[in-house]
Amino acid sequence: MRLKKRRTPTGPPGRRAPAAAATSPFYRVGDKSASQRSSSGIIPLIDCHGFTEVGKRRKENEDAFLLTALPMGRELRLNEDPDGERLVPSPGQTGFLLLVADGIGGAPCGERASSMAVKSLSGYLKRESRLLNAGRTEILRALRQGVHQCESELQAEVERRPECEGMSSTLTGILSLARRFYIVHSGDSRCYLLRGSTLTLLTDDHSQAQLEIDAGTMDREAARKAPGGNSLWNFLASDYSRRSPDLGSMPLEPGDLFLLCTDGVSDALTPEDLQRHLSIRASAESICNSVIDKAREDGGGDDLTAIVARFGAAAGQA
Image 1 (cartoon, rainbow, N blue to C red):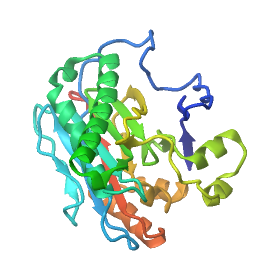
Image 2 (cartoon, one colour):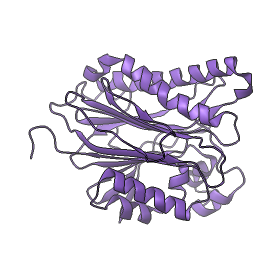
Image 3 (cartoon, rainbow, N blue to C red):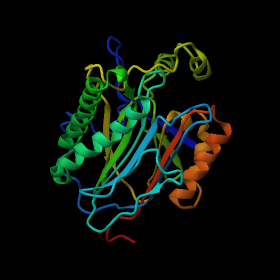
Image 4 (tube, rainbow, N blue to C red):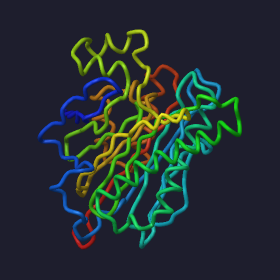
């Protein structure tokens, strides 16, 4: 089993960010070497399924997810359907948006915050129809603007409902367009990519524990158990802080399989668990259900949310 971890050049205010790996496959805003257009052809989304359920020690589900097609498509989302949701692409849909969010524990209105986060970003991107033919720099900047729009809507919600002051959420997602995918990420939800036999964690946890691990001051187990280790320094908030999400892009390849999940899932499954479940030759729904079942069995009772998406051969290819 091979698990790779990609590091991103981010860090909390006042702390030096780790250097980006020279071999990082991700294009970032400002990379002068990146071409401005995707190559011809489309690598289609052929199977996608999302599922969420309230945790055993929770009164309500503060997770949310969203699956939708671009330029237009019915949104399949949130924490309303106990049977999960399957996204069925239609002809002419060249882009797909997959999002998971987790209301920050201990903050008010967590269920509302996560739901607003996924709906707000989806709505913003659907209004920006020009993105279907835009260059990478423009797409990544639009994702950043979309996250800022999410925060503006959280702020407006607090003004309407003062009892929600402090509402906040994680947000992690991928936007696929033609032959590339784009990542947007704030918090400690995660995005994994299984390409061939290699499992890669594409996101960094924006947590105090991860900072200690990166700095070499604690091992993973000690950091996980340390007081405040799960506290986040980057997330969507209603406090006008304008934190910056991690953004990245890289080419899609036929057969790529993605898992997006909240920490209720990632905390419960080892890399070996993930490799085994994601490598099953089965539908996205079956894989998603097996991941959730394992997390439910071994987890600590947190809300559980996962999206599994598989991409196929490019149009015209066998």
